[in-house]
Image (cartoon, rainbow over all chains, first blue to last red; front, side, top):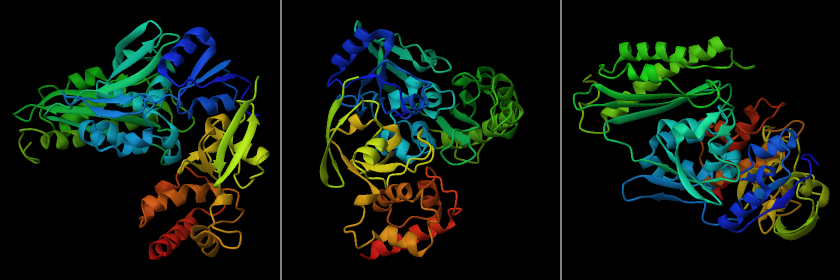
Length: 300
Length: 159
C-alpha cells in the first residue's frame, strides 16, 4: 500500500460534504480529481486522517454562460471538459489556450478546475489564468458562502484564502471586454511537464490603437501567480510594438521572483520571462486588433 | 480502517472486492483481480505505465483509489482484444512496427492510444507525439511507436 491509512467518506451532496468538513476540521482533506493529492499521499508527504471524496456529488460539474456573458464553472468540472467546451473557447480564450499545457490528457481526464485552484501550485497553469482573467471564486462553508477575487485567493505556495472546512464550489470568469487581446505561453522541457516559466498576458487597445491596460501574470516565477504590475502599468499610453514590449519585458523580468529549480536557474527563468513577455504581448496586441473597433492588423 | 465493498465492471465482467480505502486502483487490478497487464512504474502519475480506461477515458490507475471505481467501468490491456487468439489492430501494429522492446510501458501506451485514435482517426505525427507525451518509454526512442500508431490508424480507418 502506498498511502498511509485514512478514513474514506464519499458524500452524495455538497451539504453533506460541508458537514463532514466541519465535523473533521483540520484532519479532513477534500479529494477532487486527485491528480496532485494522491501522488502526495503515495509519497506520504500528505497524510490526511480523513478523505472527503467530492466525486459522488452531482451538480458541481458544469459550464454555464450567464446573461451578462460571464462563464460559470463548477469546481468539479474536469480539465478535459474545459479543454473542449465551445463556451470556454468563445468566452475565456485565455483559459482555452492554456488547457493543452495542463499536464497530460490522462491527467486532464481526472483533474478538476477547482482542485487545481485550491491546490495553488505556483507551477500550475490554472491559478495564473484565473488571476490574469480576473476570475471570482465562490467558497462555501457550513456557515454560508462568500466570493473571493482570484487575486486575493492565492496567498503563497500551496496556500489559499479558503478557511478550514470551506470548499471551493464555483469559478466565474467575467466576459472579455472589446479591444482586449490575450496570450498564454510557457516553456517546458517536454510537453506536459511542469513549465520552467509561463505567462498569461492580456493587452487592451483603445479606439486609437494605443495600449490602455495590460496584465502580465507569471507561472513558476515565485510563490504563486506573480503579477508584474509596474511592467504592465508602463504599457499604458504606449503604441503597441517591439519597443514598448521590449521595455515591458525588461521590467517584468526584474519584478518576478523566480526560485530556480533543477531544470532552470534563476537567471534562465528571468531570461525566459523576457522572451515570453515580448512574444505574449505581440500575440495579445494582434488579437486585440481583431477584437473590437480597432485599426486593422499592421496599422500600428 | 474499515474495508469498503467494491463492485464494478472490469473488461466487461462484473468484479467485486473488499478493499481498504488506501488501496490504489492499480494495485486492486494487479493484486486482487490478477490483471498484471497493468504495469506500475513511478506510482505518482508521471510514467503512464498504469494507464487504464475509466468509463472509456484513459486515466492513471495509480492516481485513483480502488473505492472510487465503485459502480464504474474499467478496461485494462487484457480487455483490449476481442479474443485471446487475436490482437487488437493497435497491438498488431506495435508488434509489426517494433513499437516495443522490453514491453513494460506498452500497456499504458495502448490504453492511451485506443481512445485517442477513436477521437482522431487520422492524426498527424505531431498529434501522435502530443498524445503520448504522458507515457514514458526508455527503449524505443518513440520513433517506432509513432510508426505503429500511423499503421494502426490506416488500418482502423479501412475497417
